Image 1 (cartoon, rainbow over the protein chains, first blue to last red):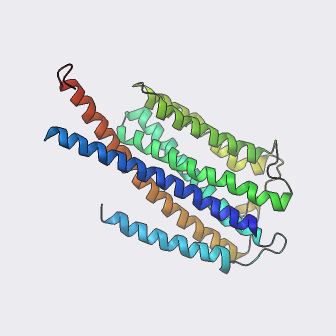
Image 2: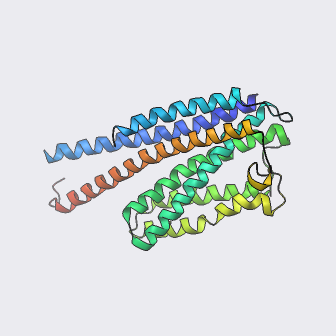
Image 3: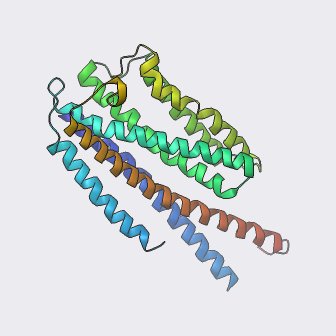
Length: 41
Length: 230
């Protein structure tokens, strides 16, 4: 059973890490866009 | 389109939850391997999803080489990146199934296992190339690498037919058959993971388009700004 749960947990850990990197990159881009908008105004 | 994303996200989450329930509880227990066989529902559906994503990368790379379309370049990048995520799942869940069943984590020299690892390495190198090369020719070089890399996909898929391998034989088609209830759960998990992959691709595509817009704006700004003004 421990291998079964390890496999399922590892799968979701990998996907969560990837979604985390996507969210972080979105936040960085949003901040950059905000900076550009501030410079223009 | 912005409204569709959360709706599709909610449907995918429900589908993934139902597929998880079916895989862990509703699917019948395999007689020889017991519960550890349930890893198969995540392992195989992730592998099929990765193959589809690498196929998308291959087609988009060819389109880029022919038409030099930026959209095709973005689609190729997205396919490779999300494909690597799913291929990582395959490479992690495989040994976690092999250890209790075969008694070893990895079978060195096994064609299916080795070719899958090589496939993962090819697409990781593709992503490293895209990440760290700033040359204007990077998309073209990456597209050529993707076309050659895609040659490994049929090798991975057909290796269990053509070579003697420790990896289990195919469960669908001519190679073998599984319990229809297990097949139902496998297809359900594949559908759920395909929807999840589509969702990730959607988000990654939007991110890449946005990133290119920002880079373009910054490049224009630095061109228009007088020297020493920053």
